[in-house]
Image 1 (cartoon, rainbow, N blue to C red):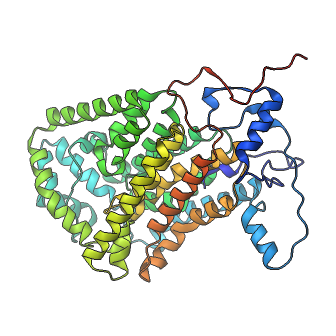
Image 2: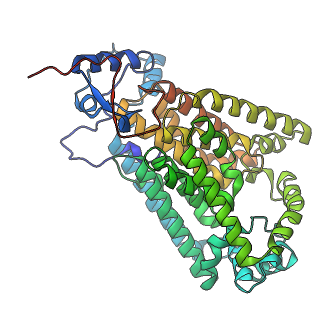
Image 3: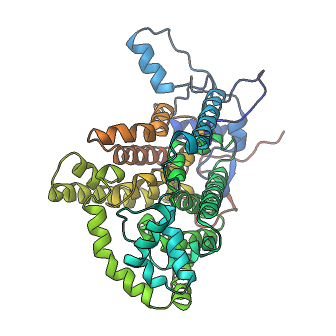
Length: 477
């Protein structure tokens, strides 16, 4: 639940989220159609998926509710959650942000043995070897020894990112490890914040930055903020600038599993320019990596994949550190065969829903939001630090809610999902993996929201006027 919920405004004004109890879930289409008919609305295609600015600017009619007590009052409070006002959420997340920064600042004194940026060491040492002309050594014992030289003697996972990833990390090998880690975390965090901000038309990015999953990723020095930035950027540009969106998706050649569903999504939505750009970008990165590093890294990358698979799917670091249905079953004590059955079933359901929903072409941001949520159910080796990518469908949901009104239980559901990373560690210690539940909940919220979009079959070209089917000619004044 990122930014959305909040935009600073004078104290004398009420938050635009206060007091709005929209009877939206069951009659949104009729309500919008009636309003548009009265106004003779002509809506630009760029605003497909949102209410027209004229409609949004009109005051909403308050819905009378009889006084409730007990269980009825609790249900109403959860259903509408209008106590989650913009100002309250912004203030709450500001406190979060200050606490997170303070906790990191005292690590050298409170936890001097803690390795901040632990995972970034693998990226930096691999890039360092590549800079020395030994990119292939990153995939073997030499690469592990290099990580041990930075972090201390221990057992480390093999480096199993494709050679294209080295192109992104190569510049960081030019500076010392600590400096590189700080630059990496700050730049990817800034890119993530910019992507979320592009998806939201109003509000601050403080809730997005204070999302607990962001700080999990930052502490490890992982690359999920970079992934979230690419996904958010593609969501923000897919309608208007499909080539740019395709280039951003093509950059996932550095970590293909995160964009596993991207080709299917682009084909279903008939995003041919974006698909061509993504394919071209991937090809260019592969050729560039081969030209710079040679063929040896590719050979050793393929050779290390079985070991990497055994390490992750065998629970080398602990199944609590993964976020897939497969890991959830293994963490709960289930066998490998049972876990694979659940994983394949979850992926099949996710892909089926994806296909059915995207046939209606709900718009670029909605398509990427749904893709991200479904990815959380389809990748068996997804790390728990990848939960931060759920910020992208969360940002889309909030943007839609601010434009159209909140659906029942949507606010409270997003608030609970926002806090889920806090509960993941104690839950994992007790054999319960919450990440797949969170991904499934986000997917359900996105599908429900897509079903209530005013227009579902968005044309490929954006920017030309679209006459609403129920609209009448504007009246002369």
